[in-house]
Length: 134
Image (cartoon, rainbow, N blue to C red; front, side, top):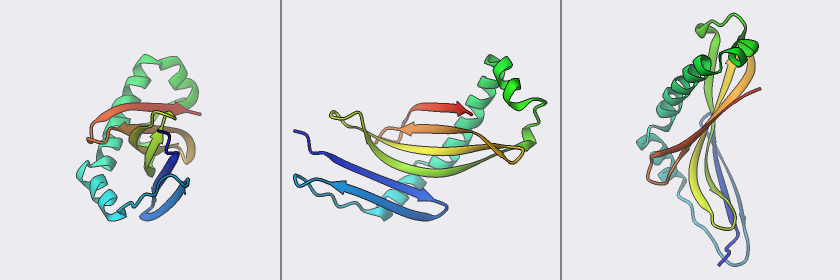
């Protein structure tokens, strides 16, 4: 049964934006406060930043040539990172894999140089990540 629901929740600098597209076959009630509590309970912000630094350091050592072509004379104190959004996503139509995804922006010397995405199962476990450098 294809219900055709797509819900995206974005937490952007303490404001919450909800976009909901629902077809005639279903309706959804989403408790925003419950989602906020889930974000706090799972420590998504803390885990995202910790996992970013782990993966970033692996990238720096395993992809050294590429790393230094992007960052030049690298200084860790010049790296800034912040959570851009946290989303509840229904992906892989039509099976729908439900995930919570945090998006972290990576700045280096004031310029946006990449993005780190951390994927969580609906049990709060980390399932995957993407480290994307521009």
